[in-house]
Amino acid sequence: MDYALIWAILISVAVFAYVALDGFDLGVAMLFPWFKKEEERDIMMNTVAPVWDGNETWLVLGGGGLLAVFPLAYSVLMPALYMPVIAMLLGLIFRGVAFEYRFKTKRAKVLWDWSFIIGSFVAAMSQGIMLGAMLQGVAVVDRAYAGGWFDWLTWFTVFCGFAVVVGYLLLGATWLVMKTEGDLQKRAYPLAFKAGIGLFACIAFVSLFLPWHDPYIYERWFTFPASIGLWVLPVLLVILTIGLLNALTKKQQVRPYLWSLGLFLIAYCGFAVSIFPYLVPREITLWEAAAPDNSLIFMLVGAAILLPIIFAYTGYTYWVFRGKVRADSGYHD
Image (tube, rainbow, N blue to C red; front, side):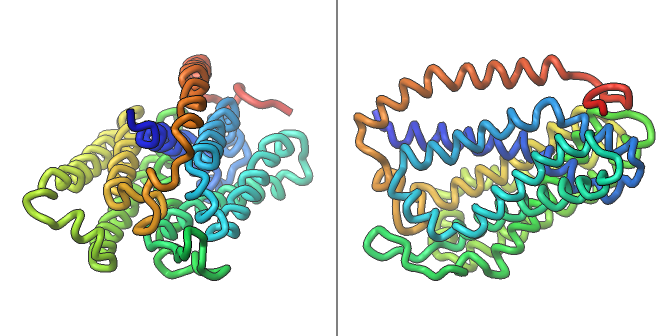
């Protein structure tokens, strides 16, 4: 069995689960500036309060899995991405602290509102920058990072950062459409519509720029007839975008969030197709980066036990806290 490939799939699932679940947490926070009323912000925060910390389980699994399963890739990528990784963790810390302190104070509520907003923005932006840095490639010599401290900072990585911010805004707005009602829900619809168009434009730009910028990606996507099967992804991207905008126009409540997840899934598949089989693009493949098979098998046994438990308690949490969130539910002073 190809244990390295199995683990690559498991870690990919964990990373996507984090993006899909914690993405709307971060998006809801970044939508605060469009909702000024304290009661509205309380409701928005209460929509994510029961699940936000559980959502971050997937980030731990993804990062920890990379260290344990692909130590060579971890040793190369971490020095290349130290600053955005640290910024992301600090942003998540501020976001987490804001959850607890905002409901315990009156005078400093504005401070914790902005901690919630800025911490979430920094975390989302950092994640996009890391994604962009992986797509543009990192310098490797003798299986070690050979670049500079700020190689991760380019116009392309910043653009990818803003693209992830726009995507999380879409997830946050469609989450509010699904979980709230009344005036708050009505105002979330146009925000989701604009974010959906923005995300489609960002994905389209990256999809056109990367093949022009990177010969390897160009060959992967434009070598006919071998690449014809991959073109189902951009077709699905258009279909999903139309479905999302149509659902928002018809004021549907659950489907916009599902269409949004579909957009993220297609973009994620496109990213995977563009870099496979590399973990460090064009430098280190997943098989070169993998730990010995004995270690992979040992950890796979643990994953086979823990992953169903994580899926079970995550699903149970969302089932318990299903339905609309109102002003009299959730956290209280």
